[in-house]
Image (cartoon, rainbow, N blue to C red):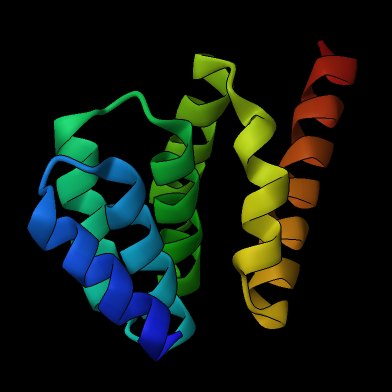
Length: 121
């Protein structure tokens, strides 16, 4: 992760508008345990392109990790509304085991709540 972070940082310096390098940088920061720094980097990337599912999904995990369930839900809803959920599976490979479990449990509980509410209606 430190080597990836250094390389991605250099790429961002060469082209500050390169979104892929910013995401790679944020993923490396996350892997190194620098969650706040990763969050800041993703927030900057999101401000440039608010409809990017890979950024929204990563931010959702970071919000859930911090215990901000409502914010995490809102970001996941936005990913679903955009319709580009293909980013979720590859991102799960990046997440640490405990965060992957957190995301799965959270999504499972939310899905059950939605189904239960629809059945009651």
